Length: 323
Image (tube, rainbow, N blue to C red; front, side, top):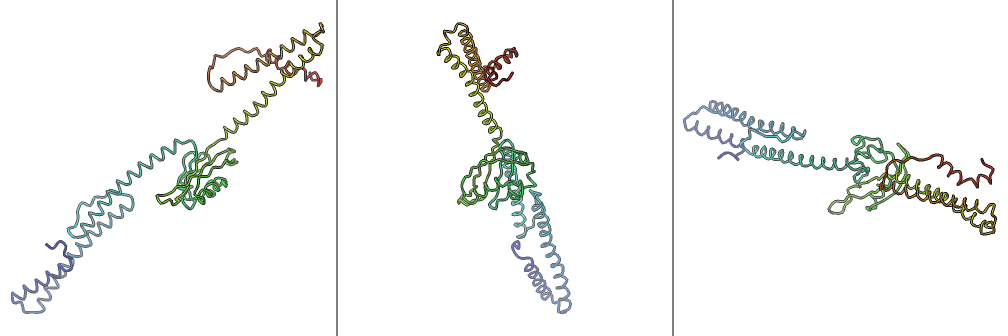
């Protein structure tokens, strides 16, 4: 019946009852009554203090452990007063924190696994432009370590103005921003960066996620293709020009020159064969790029290849007296 009664009032009630009993028994000495009352009060005060401070000390120790990340915490001995209800609430909070921490750890593990499997670099910053996440690809590209760059700005962490400007523009505008840029340090590479703002349910911008796509090899391939097309155009033009020249010579009267007409036709034919072989080479390159119809290794007569190359440029060489 006294569970919810404060201990101070409970002690006061006991002392009052004791004084009434002493008076009823006829104890008339005031000093005796006072001494007995003080003794009972001291005993009750000590018991009350201990009853109050004991659970508080235990509760303080438990909350310190929870604050240090040690949970769940089970309180084996709970008080019967209101402090007991507080101890039970703290214990329930401890188990709830442990459950939430497990869920967050599992989600973070999944996110880390996903980010680790992405070849593109991924950076995330908060609303102040400070890094909150960087995947392993970013670490590899910029030779940094994620824990060391967390809470730093882009300029402080990786010292790249293009990426920093890209993220700042997205933060200010609240829109997706794309940009292609070249990076010189730590290695010379080319990237396409895409910055997307992160918003909460109300639409407020919380930060920006930036993805970096390495297009270095792609740009090299485009350059190689451009050079290849230029070289092929030149190689195709050379035999075609030679064939036209020989045909024009024949049409202009050399066809009746029995001493040289056959020579002109044979040379035109040789250039036509070279042109056909060049087209076959182009088709072979196309098949190799598409990884289709890859046949076995074959023997090549290097002397014929060199002779064909010489025939292709022989006319120009003679005009320039090159042997």
